Image 1 (spheres, rainbow, N blue to C red):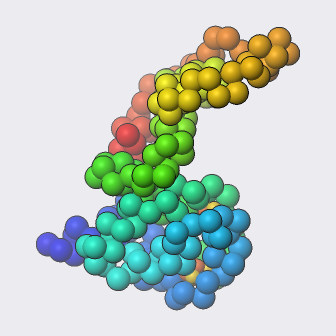
Image 2 (cartoon, rainbow, N blue to C red):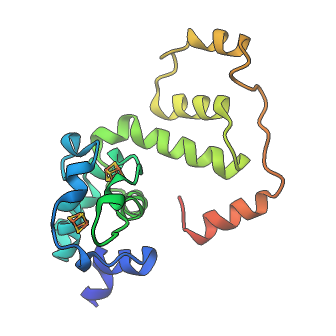
Image 3 (cartoon, rainbow, N blue to C red):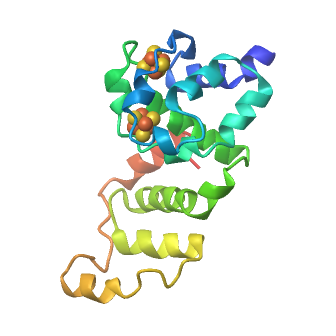
Length: 182
Ligand code: SF4
Ligand code: SF4
């Protein structure tokens, strides 16, 4: 029973990534542009998954590292085992939200942005900056930050007022449903 519940098993089942293939060479962390700011470097994240301990799983889901990852894919391009760390990070973010274990520091700005971005895609299927900004400001409670930039951007046509949704929004809904995205 414990085996089914470990993060390692859930990651394997949902992303196809087998953490045991990582042999801790550290090349991912050496190339990661955010490794210096992360509480756990990418190879440490892989090691934490490998140990299959409940407390370690929890620590990982509470970490800031999973929210700092940019999905730049530098790690996977350097990994001799082609381990898809960005995919793992993405899964960990969703698990963290589902279990209510969000990192406190990321909760102030990164997580509100993450959720606003996903909502923008969920409802329009594409980029809609005004909606994204408004939603982010409400979630992060930073209503007035950068407000003076808005008139200039509107004047220069950088921000379309109305969203242009993709034609088949049903497909977008299906993707969110299939991936259990919050
Ligand atoms: S580069 Fe690949 S094998 Fe090496 S530590 Fe990172 S994930 Fe593991
Ligand atoms: S995808 Fe994430 S973990 Fe990998 S190199 Fe980029 S920021 Fe680092």
